[in-house]
Amino acid sequence: MLYSFIVFLIVMALAGLLLWVMSVAVAPKDPHPVKEDTYECGLPAPEPIISSVNFQYYFYAIIFIAMDIAGVFFVLYSVGKGDPKFGWIFILFSLLLMIPLTYVMVGGNRR
Image (cartoon, rainbow, N blue to C red):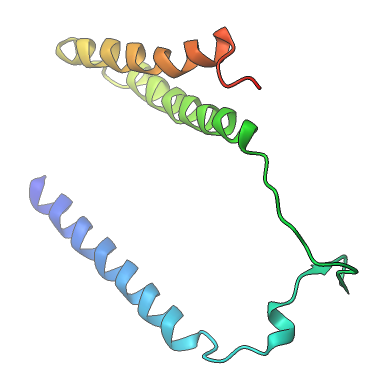
């Protein structure tokens, strides 16, 4: 079991390295300046673009993704064998997930 996991890690590391080498080999070395311009609907921007990003909702998006992944873990735990000796890890994981969820539900990160 441990041997197959180590082989899996080595294969994934080599695959990642291969993809990185391929992207460096194929990427353009000196792109044309027109390709670096900002476009709006396929046309050049009429005025310089000043980008201001509102980060207010990124926190909620991260919480959503974390809860989505946690839901997958919960389903796998409940559908699988559900070994009782790992029940305390399941409870600890649930409690740790409640900290950011409680922060969002109470109304944190309001402006």
